[in-house]
Image (cartoon, rainbow, N blue to C red; front, top):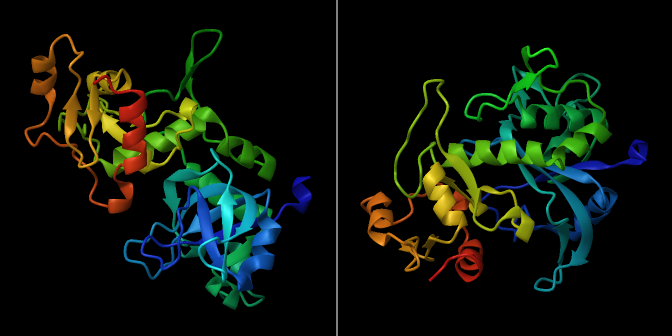
Length: 303
């Protein structure tokens, strides 16, 4: 039951000395083994330290599947993330929000931050887990498509309000809900690509201020593709259609490939930006990972 759950916090930074791939594994030394063991079968949130420049704060959630000994380092262990559970928050949560520490369990009796805040792995109370996830998933607004209107039986449209006061069980259900995951994936991909189509280079905003680009999975979810930015590309509707149908692909050096099976390759080539390469995010961690590009070329792209 959820009353015995041990939610947790895993601290991670992109320049870490540890062999972490947040969506797949978290490497840690033996001193944290007991704490990580408490989280097996339960959910954790990832936190980027405040001392990191432009820190993302609490930036993702994932479920710990098991712990194994690191086969490449006898002094280390790996927390294996359950496939398909990792989710980047569409709205990363700062460590402090309006001068309030979001993770209330870090405060001592005097209301000051305790030494627990220095621990790279620590347990997280259900209340803090709910608070962080609630803020991380955020409202369905901003760069999202217009899917926030519900039509009532009498035809009156009413704006849906973000979920509030949810139990830990309800929050966990949100983290595995396909619609919620798609919204957060879209937020992160469009933010990383500055709402610009990575193939055409066009950045079109409609009259309502919404970006006219879509978040495409490189390796689709139905083929075990994760909901992470490095498995995503921001594409216009037409480019997305061509990419999904294998009429365009991407090489490991990010050159845009046009299928010979296209009925009008010249027209397709005319849509490609002048560089001939995919326009990628500045952050290396957000750029397409080679294994996903290889999957798309081998399973989708029509040569």
